[in-house]
Length: 484
Image (cartoon, rainbow, N blue to C red):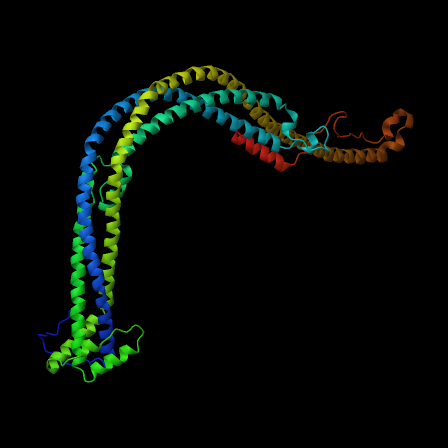
């Protein structure tokens, strides 16, 4: 905001002076903007409160540093013990996981194969009882599969129980170590600080050295100065508007009258009272131009002041939360020491549990491997069963094709026999016409016989290939070609 009436360059033309109503409107707006002084006071209070928080944080952090250092040393030793025991336990658990994964995959394949058997319906011409719908699954015994699966479920259940006991022991040990680490390192506080001051999360720096308060305080002081400067510019703008009203004929009375009609309109009697110092026309014109320009910025400046104070309030909340967490940290360090004592009493059980799991797992793994072989054999049999059925359909299609080819040969032969028959009959008739009257009848009784005739038909007692549709056979051919 310029808030100045000085001018150093002449103007070719002067814009029309603002109306009295506009001047009064600018004056009212500038008067209301001065209420921002309360936010300026609040900004100063926030800065002082932050300084107090900074002093408290330094004292609190120093009280817990020594105890935290000793606990951290013990925690590193316990982590080495945990890593050693965990390595042996994970070896057994990894073997169990691989077996279970393999079993799940085999079970899924078997179920998928059996589903395919169940959904593959046998063609009508192949079923012994065509009126009953049957699938490939109806021709096999499912009892063997169920028996193998039940045996596997028993072995897996025993192994799973052992694994759960192992997992509970390891989880308790792991949780206790993590609890101690959380209590002495305050990861929640580190995260809040990282968000506040931009430090990387997971840093190993001491909590005190990661304090966000110094940077926040510096930012607050800068915002406080900006708020004060903005308020000063609003005051200057108000003074300029007031001067313009006083130098406008009837301005004071109009300001009092118009603001009285506004809801919550500011009182103007004291502001417009008194005679103004005389100024020239040129100086008044410059003053009106500055007012018109600055009036558009009043609301923006007020909002900027509010944004600064709102940001400072948020920063103060961050600082207060940080200091409160530092105070909780002292209690957390003491609690971490108590957890360490409990870990020491249960350390032997942590180590022994891994050995118990390995022994139980070795027994069950042998049983599971035997049943897995049986399950794999069943799955391979059913897959081959599906493939054999598809190849059966392909074979039926091949036989249909061969029968069709044979029928074409027979049809072609029948046509040729008909031609030969007709030719033979014609020539026999011609021979009888030429020589029959001269030959005695008893010289060859077969002279008047008709030509021989032959039959072309399938041999009795043999079945034709089943009447399977071409679409069914084509799908079977595609499955065989894909190997599925």
